[in-house]
Image (cartoon, rainbow, N blue to C red; front, top):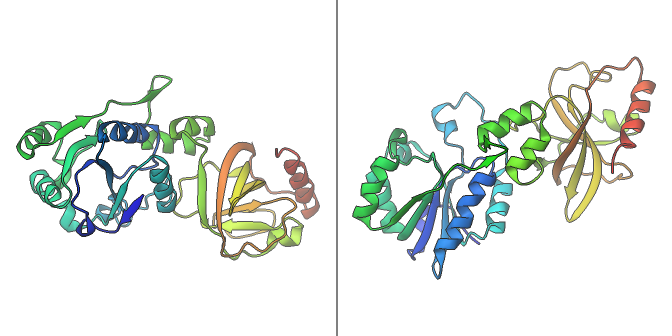
Length: 298
């Protein structure tokens, strides 16, 4: 897969195309890429997505709690067989283009024979380019336009908002069913306060601030570090027994692993909820509970 940082670097070769934010890259999105490959035949597949979430442009003060990192998304695109990935900054100038201007300009840079979109996809200024507007444009610009139907699981629509709702409710099984993979959080290991190490259970801390997370509590997890997988115990919360701050922490303990992970990239995969976070009467009681928690790990 070739990664392009702008449409100006487009290869001007014929392709089949899809466009979207692909928030979470769930099974509904994945069906678009399967259809893309079916239509490609002897041409290449191309994806235009955004290096920033469109919502950050219009509501910069409202955080968008992500379901997937850009690095994860790129890796998933490659697994789905994308030939050319265009990572386009979502700018004010781009957002103000009419559907006609956007697609006409795009056709000059990236000549496409097919445009395949999700059922609710809109293109152009104020999401004005829906099916009624795009079908005449498809005829004029001579490309095949296809909208894929909703994808459901147990009679419920798969969507990014449904995944966020399930995740915040702690329904990890539904999240995994909608994503087609277990939910995971990825990021560099930060320098922590060292409280876990003093307890005898050193932890690797990740920044939780821009992730959509399951409820506060202790989870059975698995971490990917380099090419290795390790069972781990992850806490989302405020560490009330040993800390007084209210800042949310995301920390994971990897049993029998003593190497310093500071600065390394860690992928925490959520498997199951073990228990709520609580304040223990003593450090010794907390240590005993952690030892018991570790026994639940596979």
